[in-house]
Length: 127
Image (cartoon, rainbow, N blue to C red; front, side):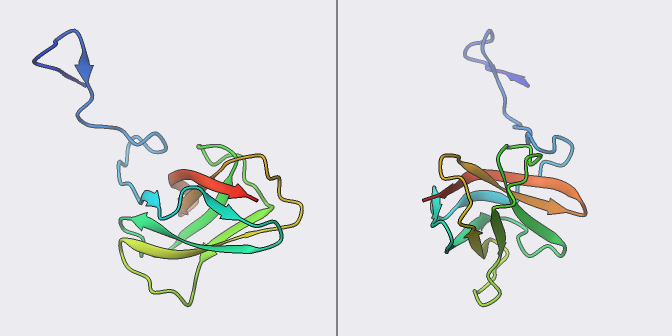
């Protein structure tokens, strides 16, 4: 935390900490190309994750009902679109919702690496 030279009473955080992993501040997700990503019940939705280091080997994706990634939503699958063009800063994805998926909740896209959650982004909904 740094002190604002103009207003020393009001501290300014010049070095933001990743809330998911404060030790490793690498942000994989900058944003989802659509927000919200609206996934039809019983259907699929194509979207892109825009960010950094998205071609890192071993990344796994899923939907969660909370930012921490602890409430995995098994009614929505999130996975890489194998036919899309992958780039380090843009990754084509598919979200697939079952007929049972709850349509009144906003979900988080979660990225895991080696069993550890490395980033999350809010923005999946079911319509």
